[in-house]
Image (cartoon, rainbow, N blue to C red; front, side, top):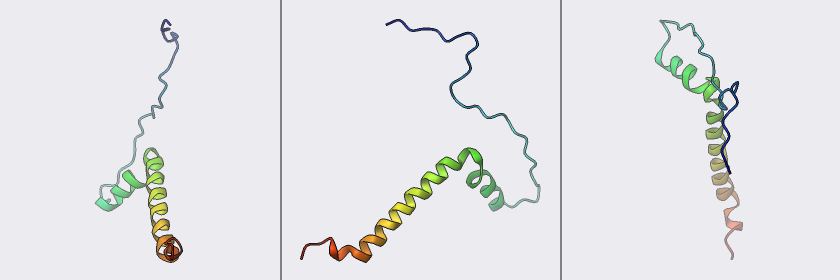
Length: 75
């Protein structure tokens, strides 16, 4: 089957965010800058939610195993 070329007016299939100018406070601490750039940044939010979901499921599994683990082992 032959490949077709993209139409002349085609745009990239991926999302390209426009460059934003952020006002950076020169007195901002390194911790505040880390929180702003790595934790609450919109482009990193899906990955952060995925990490929190995985950690929550892991912690819930440990809690369930420690609380009701004796019922999982046959007597």
